[in-house]
Length: 114
Length: 271
Image 1 (cartoon, chains in turn green, orange):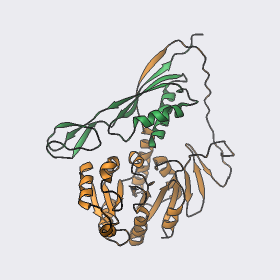
Image 2 (cartoon, rainbow over the protein chains, first blue to last red):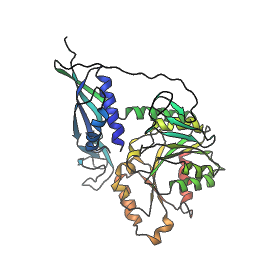
Image 3 (cartoon, rainbow over the protein chains, first blue to last red):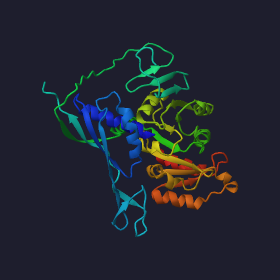
Image 4 (cartoon, rainbow over the protein chains, first blue to last red):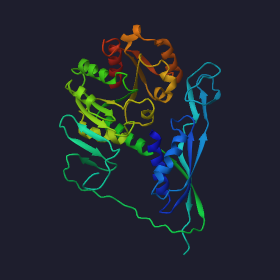
C-alpha cells in the first residue's frame, strides 16, 4: 500500500502551499502507467487529511492516458498497461505520457475580512 | 509511544545493527535508540485557528511532483555511494524467491574477492540479518513495521549503522513485494529482480513495473524445474516484452547453477 505514503505526501504538500489557510479542494494528476491506484489514494485521503487544514477537501484525480513512441519505427501508440507492442512488432518503447504523479491545483479558502 | 518526546512508535521503521546489537526507532527527522537513552530535539507544532464563516476561495495552480522527497534522498544516497566508489544493488522479489539464500551463497563465494555488506529489509524479525551475519558479513536489519518497502530515508539511516568500506559492494535486500519497491529509488546502481520457478511464469506481466525498473532478472531455483510446471522460455519472453533491455540469468542459489554468470555481471557493475 504505497498509496498511503503518497497520499500523506499529497496532504503535506497541499498544506504547505496553503499558507495556513483551509484547503477546500486538491487536484492530483495520476498517470495510467504509474503503479499508483487512484481508488487507493481516494480511500486513504480522508484518513490522511483528518486533523489537517485539508480535512474535508474535495479530491479530484485526473487520470492521464499512457502513450509511447516505438523506438524501431517511430510510431506513437496508446498504452493501457506499462508495456506494449507496436504494430511493427517492436516492444522497445519510449514512454511519452502516463507517468504523471503530481499535484496540479489546490483551492484555498480566502481569509476572513473580519 | 516514545516516553521522551511523545512520538508514536507505531509504523516507524526499526534499524538493528547486528554488529553492536543496538536498535533504533526511525522517525522523520530523528532516530531514537530503543534502549531509552536520552536525546534532545525540537518539534515544530503548527497551531492554526479557523473560524466558522468564509468569504470565497482562490485556486492555486501547482506543479508539485510527488515522491520528490524520496527521489531527492535517493540521489543523496547515490552521491554518497559514488563518492566512496561503492556499488549498491537493490534486490527485489516476491517473498520466498530465495534472495537471502542467494546473498548467503554470494557472500561465501565472493567474500574473499570483494568487500560485501548487506542491508536487510523486512516488515518484522531480524531472521534474515542473522543468517547473513552467520556468514561473517556486516549487516544491518531494517524492519519497516507496517511499511511494504524500503525507502531512501531508511537506507540512509541504515548506511550510517552499516558504515560500508570505500570500494565495497552494498547489497540491499528489499521487503519481499513485487509492487511497491518499484516506485522507491534507494540510490542504488541497479535493481535486480529475483523470480523463482516455484512462482508463476507470468510474474513479469503481472508485475510489470518491477521488471521494467530492473536491469537484471535472476530466475532462481532452476534445480526444481523437473518437479514444477514452469515454462522458462515463456517467462523470459514475458520479461523481454515488459523490458527489452532486461538481462536474464538462470540460477540455482542452492546447487550453484548460473552463479558464475551472476558474479560476472556483478563484477562488470563494480568496474
